[in-house]
Each structure stands twice: as structure tokens, then as C-alpha cells.
Length: 292
Picture 1 (cartoon, rainbow, N blue to C red):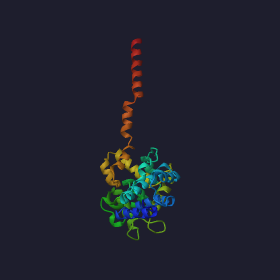
Picture 2 (cartoon, one colour):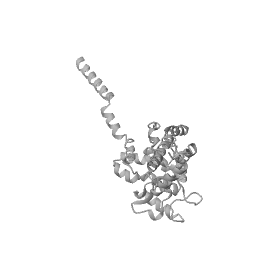
Picture 3 (cartoon, rainbow, N blue to C red):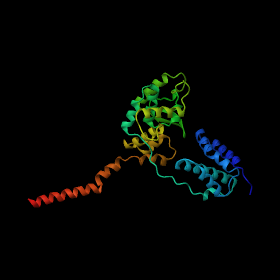
Picture 4 (cartoon, one colour):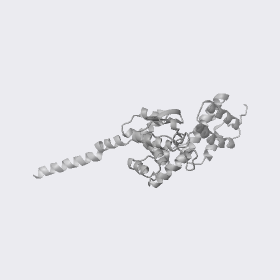
């Protein structure tokens, strides 16, 4: 059976992703996770053991290990189908990923965060993400002419989409756009175009300033808070999927698990402890009646 060099296979795979019009960020995601595998296995493995050895060497969180596994699974599925060879990934067990909970923000924390921003640019950025859960890359690439009457047009992971905005958000965006020297709405401190990392830095600084704790101090935490609170306030999953730009409704459904409002109400009503207290109270009243 012909030997296939792994670097050649990776080039084929990346070219196929580019030709399928995947976003540059997605291409970069695959390259970051598959390039170390090329160094570990110069020739494409035909058995699962070399793949398992590589996955064992991956350092980081369970999420990181699972990401590497997912990238390899997609890579091998493509290569094995194209070259009509057996797929060794079918014999590799996915690494366990403990169930985690999305870090979000409560309403009072969102207000504290807004209160920490004095400058127009930072306040506009924080308000925009709180209002519709936009991603950092979508925020920094926002253009003046894409601010509409009730929406903004953004380019995200799933392509172009129109996202609703509130009146307060639109007013701040228009003010920020009026101060911009070019077509971009937001710029860095030195006047250069604002990057995703710049958005992360701005959000993190204001979270720290507001006294918000936790390991996830970035725009994605505000995005998660938007998704959770949209459902708490009565929004539906399909609308939330459109606003947040999810290709799969299953991704959006994760936010439903964060909505504890109905669960808390039912717990208060049906908790066995509540029933026990009620029974004890009835018993006490019955005893008092007998004493009389």
C-alpha cells in the first residue's frame, strides 16, 4: 500500500477547506491543531496507535484535547475517503470531556461593567456585545455603512448576517463612527484598526475594573450572558440562533440549560422539604386542636 506523507495530506485537506469557503479563522484553527501532528507522524498512520500516542502528548485542558481529536477525525475522514483507504481514527476512543458550565454574568454585573467604561469607544463596544452577543471579530470589523436603522450587518464565522440592535446601541455606534477617520467604527489606542485581541483586552480591563471574578474574563462571557438572558426574558431558541449566528440549533440549545428560572420556580413548588414543612405544620395545628 502506497505511503502518504502527512504534510502532503495536510496540504490537500487545507486546500479542500479553502475551496469550500471556510473562514480564515477556521482554516487557522485546523492548521494550529494538525501541524504538530505532522511533526509527530511524518507518514500518515494506518493504525490507531501513533494517533493515540500523539493525543497522549497533547498538553492542556480536556477541551484542548477534545479539539485536537475533532480536528484529526475530520482530517482523516477526508483523506481516507479521498484516497480510499481504511480510517484508523474509527478505532480511536474520543478523550473524555467533563461537563462544564458556561461562565455568564448576572444583570447587576452587566450594569457594573457598563459603569466601568468612561470612554465612548469602550462603552459602545460593551453595549453592543451585551445587546446582541456579537463575537469579538464581528465587533472589530464593523463598518460605518453597515449600521442600519434597527440592525448592523456583520461578517462572522457563518458569513454575513444582519443583527438587531437597540436604539441606545445605535446611538453609541453612530457617535463612535462620527469620530472615526475611516470606514471602520472602532480603532485601537494608536489609531490602528482594532483587532480581536484588542476587543479581548478592552473587555478584560473593564471586567477587572468592575470587580468581576472568574477565569473567563473576555467578550465571550458577555456573549454567553446575552444568550442566557435572552431566553430568561422570554426569547425563543430559533430567534437566538439567528442573532448569534449559530449554524446548528444544538449550539443554541446550550443556552437553554443555563435558564434556571423555570427550574427554580418548580423547585420552590415541588421540593419534598416544602411538603415536609407543610405536613409538620398541619400536625402542629392538629395537636393544638386536640389540646383545646
